[in-house]
Length: 448
Image (cartoon, rainbow, N blue to C red; front, top):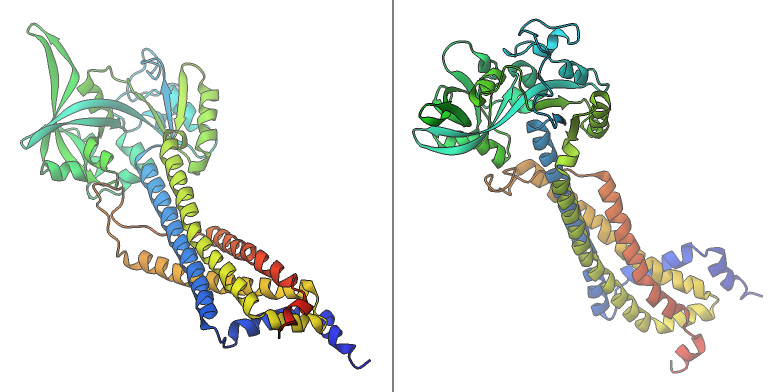
């Protein structure tokens, strides 16, 4: 009767007893220090894997966010285009500066071109906080005393575009307001890379040559127009900073030989960029044929799909590091079961059930995984914060869209990383724990 409390010791405290034994096995000095070394290696492997995942996922989040901001800073959220060249032309007989009843006065304010644009006012009326501005797309030849290059020119309304486009609100030098100057050469905004390549600054003169040209008695003569640099922008995207320029809409129409009022399309900006797809569809529904719309998400889908694929691939690769740590947990637990065979047999002979023995080794592996995951969290977050603050990794700006590695720590990523790490460590405990629970006490103690 006095022996009855012994089985009750294991059954009455079924959760605390396995945890107590698991802690003793981890903290007690082992005669075979090799097992302890393997356990430390398991903790280190899990910690390194978790830390690497935290840092890499934070960098990927930062890079994706930075690229998204740069794209949105230099591109419209929605482009309204038409399959007919003159679809945006104002009604016949409309004069500049005299809006008709079909279009508001905002449509042509400050354009210097056609004031009547019914399509523009209809786009501005679409729900979603839409601000819209006309633009004219042209490919020309830029000529300077230091060389020439092909250039993409966008004719814009300086006032409306500056309000809607962050890139034009934050020029490195100069002002967008001087694009529509009435005296002297027309103004032009150029990118930082283009300015450095041809030694241009605010006040420099450049020539733009249109491929459309003019017909004369001598044959086809390209049209040449002089411009004065009024501002320099930096988008952080090499293609934009070296191949893109902005001029006032009337100057672009004159350069290309288009009639007053001819535009390529309408750039629209919405309050929430992620609503661009619904706004683009609303624009198509509102305008109908021959108009169609494209949004920034679809136009850059390949880029963000590639980033997501790389992110997933790197996540899987770094999970292998945690997997190595979990294999070390299997090794350490198997060797511990072999070393503690007599202890397990004694516990089972005193009343410990097979499930209690199984939980001892599962808890031991779970503790190793939890400690490794926690250390990995601390190491990864600290290194990510240091990288974010001191930016000690520099990137060549002519290759990448940024010169430093941006870092954004996402709590959701941290939760996913921790959950996957703990799951892998837990799965690693199943085999050695089952082997320990199948031990037969009589067989284990036969030769003791």
